[in-house]
Image 1: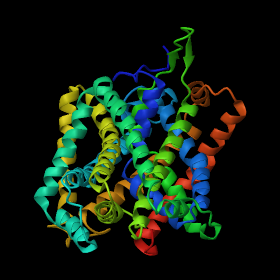
Image 2: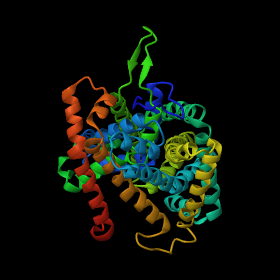
Image 3: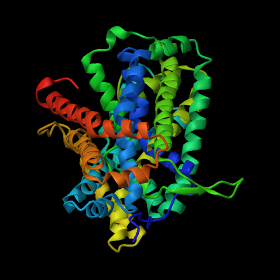
Image 4: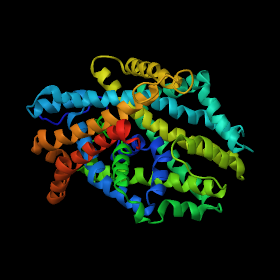
Length: 469
């Protein structure tokens, strides 16, 4: 019997649908509010070069490994890892990689829905002209008032979770595929429109300089760790999403001209995803920073820039209602395409256990929604109730993003590089260049695991003793 397992949940219609889906999973809030800022802070173009090196040496090799495992297994991450462990004649405890990824994705979905749903509220505020004439104090107060209102946040969290699980419930072909075929082109189009508008503003040159001016003096040891972390987290590694999407990736596609089948390359597909993800992140910076500098505003990291500083900029500029609305629709598209990938691994596992997809999606969505209530309340009624890392939200975020994700990525690299039969890996990758295959294998066996271990240690040190991060 062939060890190549056919996907049981359906298959992407083409290689490009897989690329769009995986790019949608990778492109999220972190691309928009984190990457542009850290690029400017850590040396501009010099940091971009460092980041691309980290992507090439760690992010891409682990992503190739995760897609490889998913396509070879053909099931949810949990059952794929069980199959692959059995085929490699090793302990089925390696199935734990799948459980780890599905759990991480589920936990992230619970709080990601809360934060992403703020963008839904801000779309409404932008459309109705609430940003017009805002002062800095009013913009800050508006953001704080939203967070302080548990009912408003609960309503938006509920709406975003329904949007997410509604897509997942429809399945691979009717749900996930149709969603990314709409969301991703819309996201790219909106980004181009916003960059085009930013190029007409007086602060465009200053914004470009902030992002791309080479300043090698800012490339410290901390900058290297920051670049490694961004390279890992931006590609959605270790949360089961990429493995699940890899399970739906076709092995061959027919050439429309010749009618012959040709193999679908995992390596080139992952390279394109990494490039698109980076371009979106840089494009977000090109769209935002000129607006901030035009308004005489200081760029900030995190949600403060998106939900406090940018509304202030939109409120001061001509066409602010239109472009503010377009910007927050872009944010919703980015967040939505990411969130559906977070719910898929757990839903696929429940479907394989005999549940109908609609029921499975409802179960996962309801559980994530209930857990997300803790994150909602962390910004208002429970904001003073802290333990370990801080609020309930802080603890869930730290556990999932600083521990479970890198641990999952580490185990994926170890399994693919050291445990899985090399013949299986080579057959699945089908790389024409043997030297390139040897480079990938060396990276996934040695450099990538060491880099992820450094990330885990840095995260723990920052949380408990370093005070930075």
